[in-house]
Image (cartoon, rainbow, N blue to C red; front, side, top):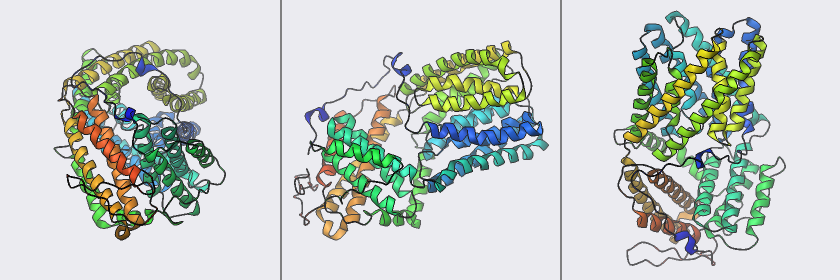
Length: 578
């Protein structure tokens, strides 16, 4: 079924600077369906080393164990097989950044050098996290730890022991993140498939461009999760069948009772009971839908080399990430030097504030600037209120830190500024482990750091242009055209390619459409660039989704689709699917 006229309504984009919103970035959202997982994980991962150091009377070492404990915030949307590798990589990256900061701090006390190294580390961490798409909380936690360590007193001989504490706490965080696999090993896959079913149900109930792209992105995320989930199990067989139904419903958006059925399946999939056993989608067999073949191809050495080349290109001279790296480097350095010039002895919070602002484009960076500033200023007030309680004893200080760790993750999915209200007192309380500081000095420095960091960070984002955003859209358009042609050919010659070949071609097209929408949205919020090719974007997206809809049904004998005047293969409807 083709898109309704509302799907084709053009959305105007301004190519230059535009008015900046004030209220919209501060509105509260619905909490994430898994908000409690990172919240509980970071508390569990922090409690073990915190309480151990409390018993040993060495709470002054909490900063180093906390660096490892904070790694428990990562990877909660990934299947456990990939989560194990991802969290291990985060722990090693955290240790590497901390090592660079500690060695620098032990070799020099020059604020100018420390700020320069902090800005360089922040830019490197930002680019690396964006290149591998690590997901929330991204580079901010890494930058927070390395920047704080730069301005902590350090001797070169202490560095190995402090890194050992970080790695030990990181091992605890790894166990906390991977441990639930022993109880519910398909939990992440079930949640990803449930989101795909819910997005497909929304698409069926309310056809339109927003639900169309949301459904395509959710289905793509579900397939990626299943691909990374490990060996096939009966539960994963059923989950793949459910994704096929979500994909078909989201692509064709047939009216009727499909939405209610999809939502019922989503609720059962998300619950702890058995996974629904839907009937095989039209034209598919009971076995896996090409996942085994695709997983084997991804493990092949040629694909691995291609993946490495793609990653290197994302970090190379022509990368679209370089302008963001330049913004991070300039903004963090400017924020640190401004605070140092005004007499702040350890301006690491200004560096962290600036680094936390940088999002995919200038408009989103402005939103984060508002959120971060408001959250930090309110958080300073919360810190002033709880400081007397935290100073009643070491145990009270530990419990306050654990409470704010939980609160930060519980609130941040509602809105970033709300989470920052809890992050700020937690970060300030960490300083108390090394000894009491004058409350007025802590509050005053943090307010100054926040304001200057936000101003310097956004100034760098506004002045450092990202003209490569439009070029990324052009490349995404070309990739969609190639993927669409491949999908149409696989459909037309499905007797030879087989169902697994057609499914791989459809998933590749879905991925390219998701990347095109992401590139277009990023470019739409960027300043100082040429206008986007609106008509080409609309045409490419409509054609791509029509191809997905036409090939959603795999039933019936292969029928060669007629060629259009341009030479592309036009997908013929299969049993009325289109």
